[in-house]
Image (tube, rainbow, N blue to C red):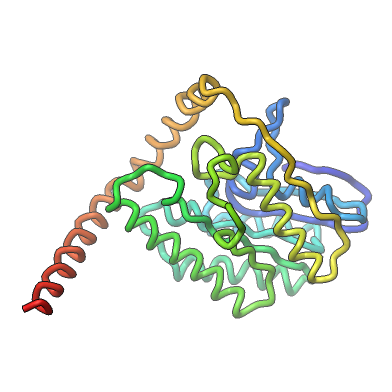
Length: 266
């Protein structure tokens, strides 16, 4: 858990996964900042910033563990960022994701919190993967975003539509893993959230994005070897079997679409 200030006039809490934790924006001292950190610094009132997010967390952890930690602070504003890890797991269920996040948002709002949620970007615009895998990934990302939009229809939350941010998929905005925003990407996201909160009447300045210099390629390769490869191997054990099954299903769907097209031509 990280903090910015104490003795606050406002409490801003964060629960969720690595995108909420700040992965992709590591400070020189080894700590992680992220968009929520920059947003916390932009409030005009003193802000107590508490972040319970954890890399790898799924929505059941957010609703079953992190939620109670955040509620203990009675936050004025709470960011709920989960779903990315759900879609990367075997047994992904949009229904379960919806139930977990809806319960989380409702309990926070009943306590008087303004709730922020952030849609997923389009990873297919950043990742170099086979087209068949892209089709599978696209469907899961769309399913997660559909859950977010459904909750936004049901509750008056602040929903950030990431893919509508101008130039959002520019590589300079992203970490080398292409899954998380880099420093610039986190600052852009902080800016978008601040704009939406201003519209809700919150008093804060709009964070600057500034210029960020990319790391040397040698440092990027060291990061991939130390972090990227272990992450891929860990996820493959759980996800690879279901990807293979889904790939076979997609192949049959593609073949069926082609057969139907040929029938129409006849």
